[in-house]
Length: 396
Image (cartoon, rainbow, N blue to C red):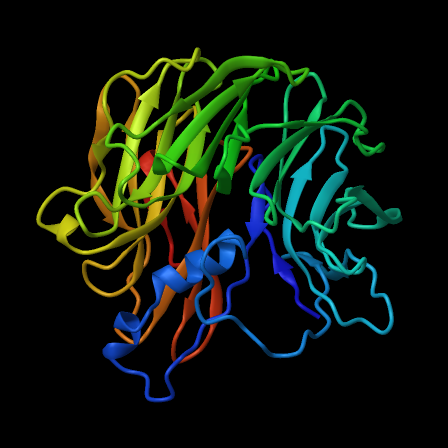
């Protein structure tokens, strides 16, 4: 059984398992053997060039839920004989105290999206239910959840086989949605990679994704109204064209104003973290900017994630290679720009690879972070923050 550790917050927390090849002789070279391109190719999907495909037989995985005050709770059902994966789980709290969780599930032979409702005590309500499944054998992956103040729940996922991002709306989270809408365009050679989305209190949706087309690799953005109607047609976020890679965008919004988009960018022949701010209508405040200043930006920075707190503004986190491979953070304000400088979230020893950073916001409007630390021992670590995103105690 694979158990998911979740920070209970207002923003969804994802479990994103990755497979790593670790060298037996761990030491200073371990971090520098990290293969970012292979990890990205594995997530992107089979329609892009495969790198080091895994040929080992499938084994049973099962989604679970962990909190500090209760035992592990299985969420997904085991179907015997189980030779498929259940992974990439997203979980969202409802105003009534229930939890809605969705995940990738291979029990049908192809990858589909299943759901389960749990009450406030973690007791499953009913059975696993199918939410989204292809009629042509395509794999549906990367489910994400969000909600608005009117009680609507929004589910997005990606067709990894055809490179399509879909959205759907639960008017009642007990009932799977019957309608989905296509986000990215279907021009010749177009393919959508990893994506993210965020929802305003009134239900307005901001979606960003990796886009591959005749233009190359770009970060695209589109906005929707709460009913799935287009509010802002598809636009390109990065201004340097598509000749180099632009990966893994993340979006976070201020419920009362605008939003920011961050991504991993290779225009300088290294991995940089770029950020671009927008107003609530999707109009940019200016060109994109690098988050990490020189000389630290000469090292690679990977996989940004952004969140917003009314108390401490925007926070962007990423994996940074300036010393080893560690999580870092930077605060940002739509009016003032960068607040302070880059700060480490965690100092790992030189033989540890940190990865899969995620950020969230507590009901008390404070940030929290979690990440994987792979080295002398493998751990999932979590860190709380106080005012101005200052660290509170050591990670646990």
